[in-house]
View (cartoon, rainbow, N blue to C red):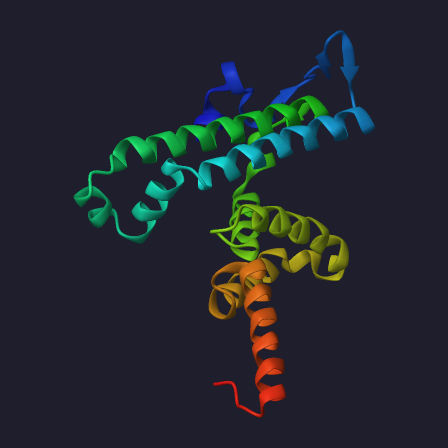
Length: 201
């Protein structure tokens, strides 16, 4: 609503047009390989930051909050501060992603990030695994390529995403990466047990 009504800042329903290409060190990155490498460099920096965060003391505190916020509070974890920190960090990442997108396309409007886009983003996280950093990359890759594979069902996009989300949440609640790792570990146990003449439960 704010994006549509605050036309003086956001351009309203018509959006912002004529956004200039990004310029770094006097070099204009309109498109092509230069922008590609810039986006991937940004991604790798954020992935590295998240990886360090997960393995740090803060990451352990965040996992404790995820498991039980009351228990985390009981052992002295400042849950409010940590949740605010994660919210701000997420906002910075999203803001930078939007910045790069706007300068690449040259146009943004409220319709660019509509309800379908929100569903797509949630599905990406669910497919990759909400507890996996690299899972989000896998989920984004799969859901980006999926429309190309299933262009026949373009008119039923919401139904397809809904079915994918439902199947993942029922059968692979921890995402594809964790699910595939579990299947691999189970196959190893089956082979080991078969070699010993035992049965895997």
